[in-house]
Length: 361
Ligand code: AMP
Image (cartoon, rainbow, N blue to C red; front, side, top):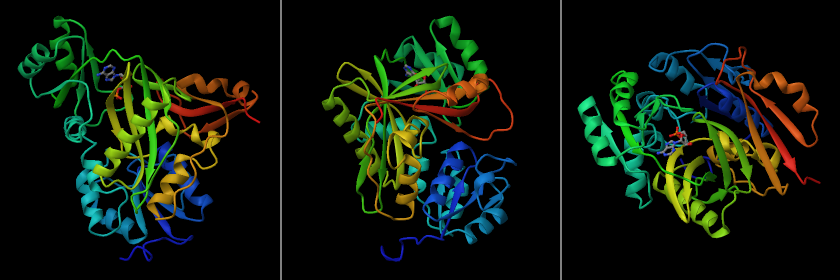
């Protein structure tokens, strides 16, 4: 396909793998640009399916459903990196996939991801793979304590993670993982956590948003504040590091890179090959948000401006019953509420977020 014929016209259909809130906000951004979306998600009644033209509720290994999905879309993207690689490989033979399989395969296993990050010359926490209790004991002897034990795959929002403070925690943490392959990471005594959200286009051009400072509680993102309290020089290095990772992945679309900051050191914590919770502030903080930017990249349109239009922006996640305070929040000045349409509230479940613009207008 030539570059020009590859540019999708409004009215084309975008397939989204995954039906959570990220897929929902992608589908809404796509609709604003005149595209239809078809969602593929194993769970029924998903947040994205309810704003899409069509939703396939089928298992990830259902080849008949995957083939039918590929038939009715012009390009495929994904809202989360835990789509099984085999499903994406099956689709790749039938459809254009952006970002590609490489972005997914190098980020869905923490061990592979950390090796990749070091391979492009960037710093990570010290780490060691462990496949048994004995392996974990050896890793603790090498890396030391405190440390964090994480499942290699399928972890999110602090799930599948155990902090080890003393040697007596080791057996219990290993048992809690239930035998899943894991990595042990040295604990990084960071001063702050920041992330870079950027988009990379088909032609390799990159547009990055302002560096975001993130606060997590219990492994879940609580707030994102922009600008981050770091020097311009460090911010530029963070953006350059994220762009280097995006180029090494041949990534097309939005990519998020989370860093720990210690003095003038940047330690890469995690790469997300997709739109990211720490980029939600762009919805009200910028003229074109990360969701529109991702859609533009995957349909091969030019990227939009990433300019911020308030001096300070704070995004706060509504987690579990935080959402009960909605009426108060919605009435506050320069405060904008976004909800994901989830039917039931559960502790630790992301229900929505609030964006407050400071010094706006
Ligand atoms: P993750 O799911 O790996 O992004 O971890 C969630 C959060 O746990 C991070 O944003 C940090 O706040 C904390 N965390 C994870 N790994 C480490 C580490 N190696 N050292 C210190 N804190 C960590």
